[in-house]
Image 1 (cartoon, rainbow, N blue to C red):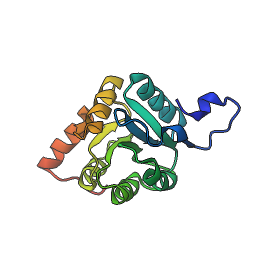
Image 2 (image 1 turned 90 degrees about the vertical axis):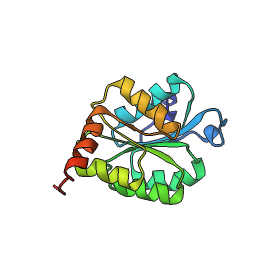
Image 3 (image 1 turned 120 degrees about the vertical axis):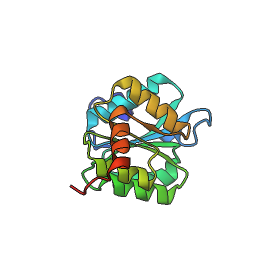
Image 4 (image 1 turned 120 degrees about the horizontal axis):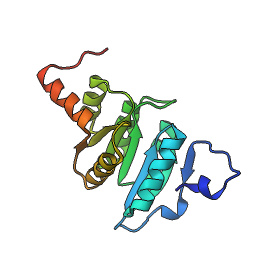
Length: 171
């Protein structure tokens, strides 16, 4: 859980860092979560913390602060929402990978647009899940992407398979 759980009277400005986690043990996967929906971001951080094997290095509600922090925090994995208030998630993905080309990024979204999924894969996302994905699939996706593999939930897998047959329109 983030800093906000420890400070019940604090205002959530959408950004929290765990300074004690910078340079955390290499046996744990360092994770940054970039998600504007506070409840989803905090629940995801809580689930991964309880799961074990993960250290939440930072949580951000906007892309720019996350991009700026990634070089300092040096996460192994970024879980990135495709739609953010300040930047398009695809732009954030491209900038993150420009700063850290070996970074593993898993996209999450409530939108099932074929072009979005295809563009994320083309830009270097290692995984993509919809927010309607069951928790067990999300956990499996995080594990696989953290291990430098790939993971696409059943919905995004179907979108990618369909895209092979007929490329998506820009609509």
